[in-house]
Image (cartoon, rainbow, N blue to C red):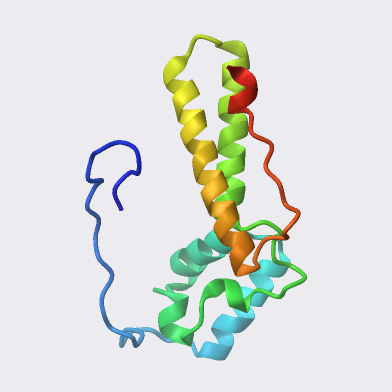
Length: 148
């Protein structure tokens, strides 16, 4: 996907195979994969980390190929994080940029980056609110406006 505010086309990446079935060398049953996801989520791992562990340790190519379900839907609701992982990562990134700007007030490229990050946060949070994955009262306090 191209970057939103840069005018560049982004970098090309490898494409996943079109096959809807797991490869012939895959040896796990769907029930085993579900049990692994449950176990790893109860240990406190985030969905992206669970996917990496399944890929690296157990050789699971894609959970959605094996189970025809998304990984996030397999995690119990009481263990799921309240805020979706991608939105949480953006909030952490904005906080880090704001801390940097408190020390370096004249860093104008970073000021712009913070504004772009916060723009992404607002768009993503509006999407998650409409989809019902984020509470209606969830609010992000912008830092970029206070730094001007």
